[in-house]
Image 1 (spheres, rainbow, N blue to C red):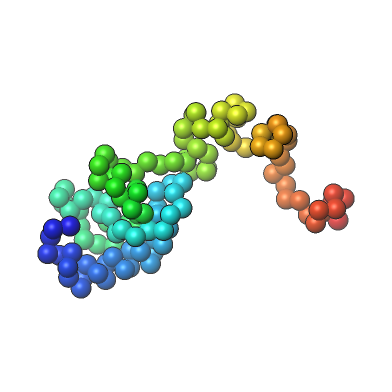
Image 2 (cartoon, one colour):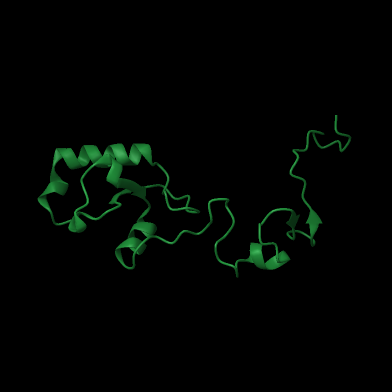
Length: 124
């Protein structure tokens, strides 16, 4: 951030607009608060200083980007952990991450239907 541009009112307005649009880090699986307006295509590679080329990142994801490329995407678009060794994928051999639950006492079927019984167990 040595460029004088980052000290201008125009940059402060772009940063504020980016963080208002992306209040939570846009890295999949990260739920930290966005505090950095990050260029998707870096300025050094011809990226524009526009809202379309900016995204909100947390400090951790921004540092990962600065020191090794894109921030790590922790989950797939469906919310399933990308790491095949993650306990959710490993515990049941469940590739989709849906259908069974091994937490609190072993595998059990998990219904995709909401429980409307209000805790009574009678479906009313």
